[in-house]
Image: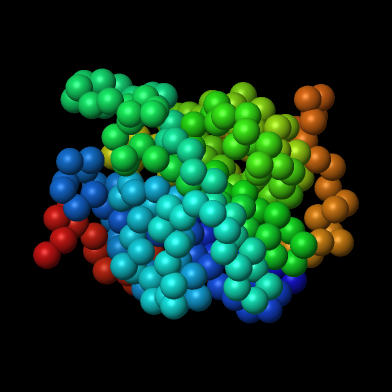
Length: 267
């Protein structure tokens, strides 16, 4: 059994059948204060074997909150441990919406190959228990064909979905699911109740869920257990039909009210 646990925003813990634990993209507020208050609380101190960050943005890189044996921070290449294989594919952060507008306003190069380094992004493909998970991070929609071919088919696509379409439009999410042949979409990077702040400008994923009601499985808790036998029963996304959605909503494995308050400038 492989378990996937939602930690709010775009953060998850993945546990392999052999017990290897991985936490991806823990969140925090921007320490400079420039981006304002995105989170009311600090990410919970969490023990795991491997900590991973897809890119160097504050809402994905609170690695210091993890008590882990090793860190794969924007790693490109391959890594294996016990019954886990991790592939990192280097590409670029999306520049649509407010992200791109801000860099234009500041006169900073946002477009590859000369983009500022904080607009680099690594997509992680983690294979364990025979199941391939793709953690998209904040990657651009139009990743190069050679990158997508290298990634190949995946089973579970964990990708930003929020009703403000802050990073990707719904059409782009559906297209990526089709390109990767995903069997399930897991929305993330949406406004998570009791964790996220409306100052982030993010919204919930309710509109996506309502538009795909017949294909949405509401997990109803913070953790979903998956097996290869069960997941192969789910049809892959095609040009004709989107795959199912696994929606964690606002269920978390911790009580946010018990976490330390977060501030814009940590002492």
